[in-house]
Image 1 (cartoon, one colour):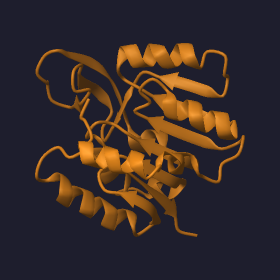
Image 2 (image 1 turned 45 degrees about the vertical axis):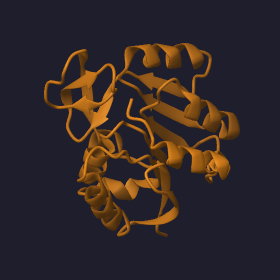
Image 3 (image 1 turned 60 degrees about the vertical axis):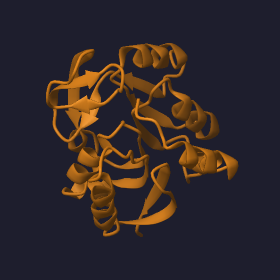
Length: 198
């Protein structure tokens, strides 16, 4: 797993910002896509608050199984063992860093099924949450190139610093998102949230 910079995480926690992540205009009929669901903490919080429908995409087997167990009694939560990316087909997941790649990674890795983000955003989505260890760049670059971006009311994303290009890529994605969405709140390279323009 790619770690947040300690100062960023400390500031987020010190300012008590975590409740922001659950503050959306949702209801029991809303649909949330939790991309990079990990062990389901975000989905647990959002379903507990709104009773909405959630599709969790989680490629790591241990996390996938944890989500299956956690939500086995909730028919409104679907857990899917796939990695959301800019392309479909087989992808490689590094089991230590939890990064996903279209190219073979250093061991230990696992080959898993990937799904193109465009294939899961063809209809109205109330909230798209992304925490996918660096793949958020590819996913949002792909999504903002299509009209599907207009199907998503809210986007909550954690951008990760992968290398020196991360700052420019994030800036370009923000510029593209600003064509259809408004930045509601932003904590640099921690979490940020965008809402569709009315």
